[in-house]
Length: 197
Length: 197
DNA sequence: CCTAAAAATTGATTGAAATCAAGAAATCAG
DNA sequence: CTGATTTCTTGATTTCAATCAATTTTTAGG
Image: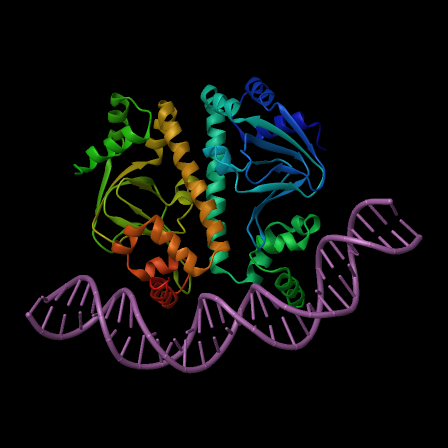
């Protein structure tokens, strides 16, 4: 079903952006950094400057924020999604996040310079970038609301409905921190959730 | 110190965007909707389609999400800031938020059509818009992290440091929901916070 | 200025999820 | 395949903020 990483990126760009075939090919060529990760490797580490936006051609990663006490997962990235430590990338500050592969991954990266040049060159790329940011904005707002207006059980059910595949691929302890609850609580919520009439 | 609303917008645009004087004047002219609000009025109500992005020339508003039980405040907007019910504006869905004046306000609005036309016309406006979205993104991410990694007292202290003026202008009960705590808790936290050695 | 309503404070009690503490099950590397 | 490590589950207990319940203080409108 997928092809090689660059093919996959090309498909993605043509589906998502209003780019002509030639533009898509030219823009895809700017994604010049290929990174292979094995389980446990980092795409971005805390304290480092994020220099790329990444297209994930294969695999699954968690984005998390490490605090003194624990690691809070703020999201996941997988095939045909784009990921970066956005605040670091955008503001060129050391990253507050780490992005770690939970599976073997293949990622294609574009540098800041190349991306902003592409934005200036192709209006459709500018639109793609705005669209991506808009998507991040609406996602974050919805998530913030969900966390502050629902119970742990509701959050679990919602995630199960929205993204059942995560439960196949991600250890529950990471999902728990994503839901802002403890693994013990998630375990209990799963148990009681089964026998609802 | 300020001038009339349009003057104020012009100043804002020239400071924030890489627009020439002529461009700034032309773009400012597209902000054709002036709205006067008195305390308690709504700039945007839940269920309505957000048709504008607003520049606040004067006054203070709260952006909140009403749930069955309570109203969760997700932010404030005031002089020289830009506000909108972004998910509604961006996706053209009914707004999940209400935006209410806490003081007498003057707002200038630009319509979707006019904004996107301006984005297509002036690269600097496209950049301003991206920059605005980027700012919203980084703000939301930082906020999400803060809420899930700090105690109520820390959140209070952080806000007091970052935005002391809010405490002069906003009833504590709204600030409490912004901090995701109950007014009673905020009251207690403020009391105990004073006498720390 | 005065009164009514709204907001803030303070105290007592409750409750949901965290924490602490073992075990059971699953997974991974050799 | 097998032992070791990690992850998950289950139970007992604690804790912090929410809730409930009055006052007191502040604010706004006539």
